[in-house]
Length: 234
Image 1 (cartoon, rainbow, N blue to C red):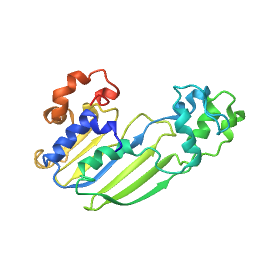
Image 2 (cartoon, rainbow, N blue to C red):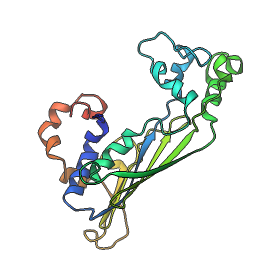
Image 3 (cartoon, rainbow, N blue to C red):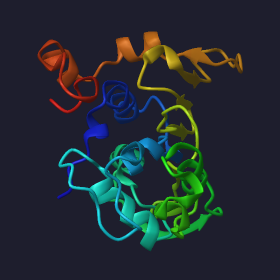
Image 4 (cartoon, rainbow, N blue to C red):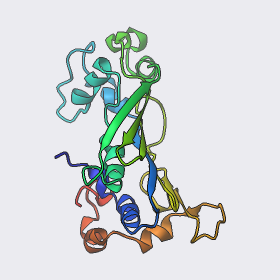
């Protein structure tokens, strides 16, 4: 079993709690992804990156040692579970539902080479500037579930951008979209009946607070200070 920490993010668990209570009605579609500017991580600012696309640096703390070669060798969804894990739980995948089909398409690859040329010492003359990265800058994966739901994943780590996991949960009775780093004030939510068909988004802050998952109510104080906003503790 693969453990996915974002399944335990406080706002994600609150939305799951609302889903299980039927507040979103029957789920139809969900989105998520890994939308995170990793350029500095993939090359550790050029200090301990792999050499000529073959050998990684010796720095034990450099994520470039395990991340970067995948971008050289593979063109696809390299890091799916942050976005997929939470929505799969909400859609009862492996609990009476399952994923049946998927297709992925990728954009061209430009971001990493551009970053090397502009930010790594040596620029166009650095060996990494000549590496041919197979992984497209944006990879979109669409998934069909046995019970008829659809899921869209986005992998976006090679271009400039603020961090976001791009969640969207949409059912027959409501819809939630997040942006930013898990801040309850940074999302949108809408329930047609409760909001009297206003067609106006509401902030998630009150909805998250009122529907906090029991685990967060119990362990929220203990989780303070743990990694990734406490979800690593959960």
